[in-house]
Length: 333
Image (cartoon, rainbow, N blue to C red; front, side, top):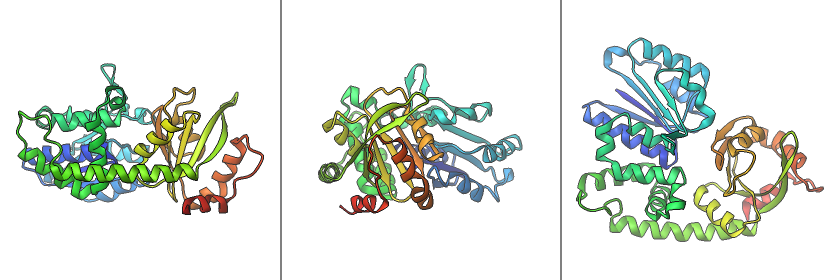
């Protein structure tokens, strides 16, 4: 059995699909397990309880990482005949490079590479078979699509957002198996294009709604505090696309914080700030990480009420306290 642990975004789905195709190429059974930052360690522990080298079990982990306790357990498995492969691209997980089964790099040969690309690089035959799909995931997740104006990368994420994990996986399996290798457009069937158009309209409508209820504050961070104009909204879906619209149409904003009630906060910017957003994510909640321009952190409801509101008020240049009832009102609008 090959256990495939992956994140929940498009890059995580790419890791899942790469792992599935590799398992099938080896005539191996597989199990995929989607993980968030707040549950990845427990999910790994739950799944590996009965793992056994006699059965040929293997572990793949991509676009997400684990804590030191779990890493030590995985290291033990790897040394006792259960192969472990972890590939991630979040700088906050680079400490895992001390293990020979883990590689965490934001860049490969000077080029930013996502978790899907790095996992596929382990299996050259899968990299070749899924090359266009992997390229689009990589372009989207590392934001290279913006500079290249690669709309197909953006559309692939839109398709994932509207179909969800299960249907997106089935869709990709169908188009990958059926496509004409002389065509560069195989990722999108007529059905896929229709879904993408519907999704884009929904995102535009939602972004307009969020902009009407955005709370703007001056966020002060650092030992010598720098002030960043920060927008705060409640968003649970299409985070990157919503953020792209809001930040483009509100260039005065340095940072956009998207609170996904009640567990997650996502951070986006389109500017080169002195504080990487991965560091900001850790600073705000104590649990999080990511990249200089895109990051996330986890937060419990109790922590949100007890700490987060107070911290925002403390770091804000506003004199008026933003109350919990006001944030709940914004969520409903």
